[in-house]
Length: 103
Image (tube, rainbow, N blue to C red; front, top):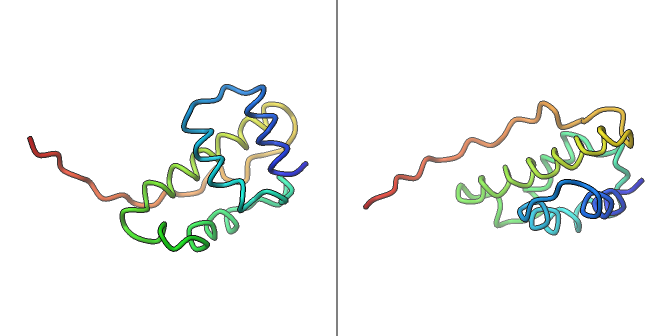
């Protein structure tokens, strides 16, 4: 099964939040034809390198949100018995800078 097919099933049948839809739109061009069994930690780490805007410090939260949405999608695939295990279980998130809010 391809990533595009899994995404369509997840959006139709899964517990989808609005940010899942937004993040999957960003991930779909990169993983569209990839089989879900071939998604690995290395492939996920290459996603930020494919877009120059995500390599900056301000892009780290966006990278983390992409990883979180992809991880959720793969957990759903495991729950539906479409995948044996989630390869992104132990992917570490990028360290984000704390932003102070001034009032």
